[in-house]
Length: 200
Figure 1: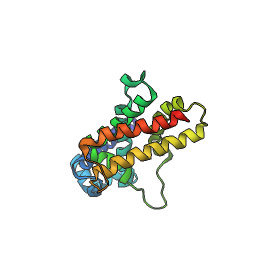
Figure 2: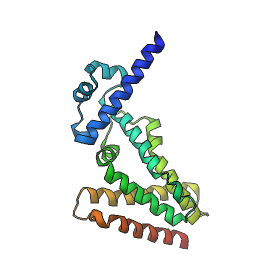
Figure 3: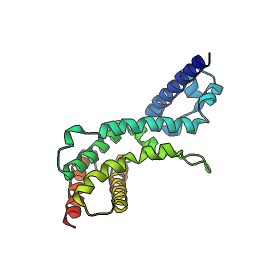
Figure 4: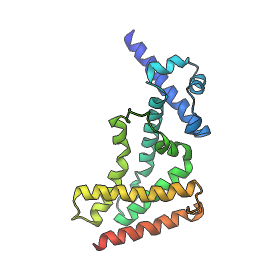
C-alpha cells in the first residue's frame, strides 16, 4: 500500500514538473500560476503542496530538469579531441543555441529568485556549477600552471562574459549584438581570450 502511494506521489510530481515546464515555455516564468499548473494536471491545488513545498520549490525542480538538458547539449563528444580553444568555442556556441532554442526555460534559470530568507537548496546550486567544470577543463590545458582556485574563478568570469553577451543580445538591449552575428562575435571573443591565456 505504501509503495503504491509513493508511486502515485512520484507520478504526480513528474506530471506537475512537466506541466510547469510547458507553462514556462509558453508564457514565461513571470506568468506561472499554481492554479494553472494544477488545472493542467487535473489535481487540486492542495495536491501540489503534498509534493512540493510551494510554487518556488516546483520551479527549482523545473530548472533542475532544464540544467540537465543544457548539460546534455553541451556534452559535445565530437569536440573532445579538439584544441582547448575549439572546445571553448563549441561551449559558447552550444550555450547560445540552447538560449535561443529554449529561451523561456533558459531565462527561468536566472530569473527565479527563492523567497527572502530561504536560499536555493545546496543540491541545486551544485547543479549550476557543472558549467564551471566544463569550462575549467580546456582552461587547464591553456594555463596548466594556474592554481585550481584561480582557474575556477577564471571559468566563472568567462561564463559571466559569454552569458552577459548572450543575455543582453537576446533581450534586445541597445548594446546587444544582432542574433545573426552573435555566434561569430562569440567565436572571436573566445579566440582572443584563449590566445591571451596561452600567452601567459
